[in-house]
Length: 515
Image 1 (cartoon, one colour):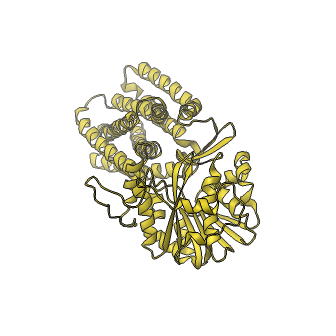
Image 2 (cartoon, one colour; image 1 turned 135 degrees about the vertical axis):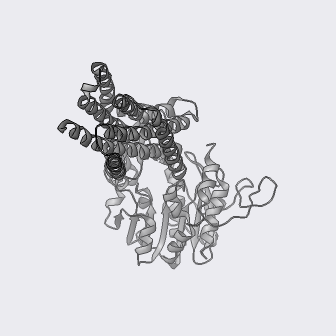
Image 3 (cartoon, one colour; image 1 turned 90 degrees about the horizontal axis):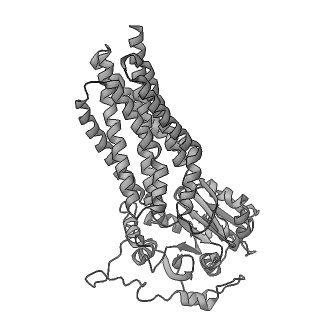
């Protein structure tokens, strides 16, 4: 009786533990899809849908399992450990070497399979708890409680510990080891019921060797896979709480990537940053108090520090890992000239939207150097609501400059951003510049007063920008101009991007899918 009680207690514990592992795998697959395939909402939606559908099918199939419940459960855990453990590792390998599209197919198949195995194991545990003498209603309630409570714990663990501390490859192997540990413990507790105990234990030992090897060496191998995704050698890589940060360098060209997207190249960053910074500073009536949203690499701040009239620069960047890298990494310090340590600069690691909501200051110049709107968290920084906040913090005679992706590769996206800014009542002027590492890149300048490009008189020393060049930047070719035609040859009507109707994400994804 005491032995049965101990076994039933462990079944409840096991249901909670495997539930924790299941939810971690579920959110891990969503994070993998978001990072590698893009469009976070789409990937998390597919992940949740496939995982839950798999669980439903697995639960249905469990009706056929009436004998050898413990052996079946052990092998389900073995399969979860193997498939889940090697999921991230294999995903990075496929991204580097497999034909386009197969990585997505692999991820969705793995998500469905782990979901099905998770759905299969819970009814088996309930049936086994009842079989060893626990009242069915009590055993079902307790196992379900352990399962649901474990789901919450798993989600919190992944968000606040596993992903930021271990990364996606190690996390997968670590969680798989827990699944394997549950299987081996159950195998030992119920060894008297299993005739082929030694065979199952041997298989568990083999799987353990594979998973422990992956835990210690898988990330290094995945790093070599990921290196294939970048043209130049990786010199720094880390996974912060918000994004994956990669620095590459080859023959003096340092490049920064955030979640796989290029942020700058040392060989031509001056073309981008001079266009971003100097026109609004030159156009503003005065430039004493400046706000930079994004730009955690410190290069835009370096350009601003050329102006003696600027007394205060506030840099707001969400990710402290980026600003710390800009302060301490030798290669970035060569580019930003230690700008973030200047006494005129204040660095705040906050969300730009929330900062503008709470700030009570007015700024003479606002520089918006944020990543492209390729996910929901970034999309809110390209909405009418955000630009309304920006307008409310811009001095009446001030000016702002917004990086606004490529008017050539993403024409509708660029002009939608312009339309969104103009919908707040601000006046806009449009510029585009050829940045070799990016291609043709666009900016939107905004002010609470009409903008005349001819009035912009540059005073700072530049490597590229002149007043004549700036004037030419405001001229757009037919294939990148605002008059965008649909398939019927009609001019598209552009609508502002809003929090309620975030259509810019879909336009962005469609525009860049072939690049």
